[in-house]
Image (cartoon, rainbow, N blue to C red; front, side, top):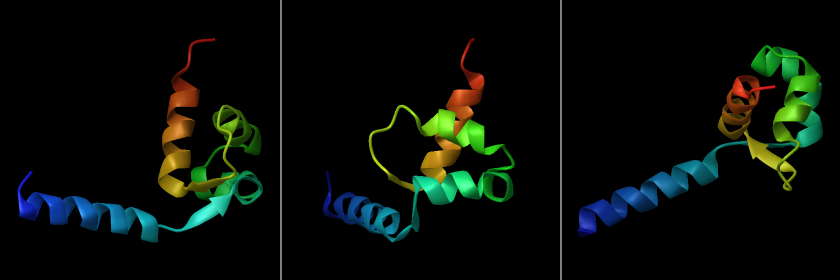
Amino acid sequence: MSQRDSKDHVNKKEAAKKEPTYNKSELVTNANAAFNVSPEVVVGALNSFEKEIFTVDEVKSAINKFMKRKV
């Protein structure tokens, strides 16, 4: 990895660290406004995670995967 690639990689990590995080209860409470889904969908999407703090992008990704699961 070149020195420039290394700096780009570090900058991406720093940007990810600056992204706001929210606890699970805040995300469930604001599910309709933030993600246009019911709170039950957010609970189901985050159920398999052991952590309690998430970024909005993490939750959106989890919701998409949850909604595409076969029943």
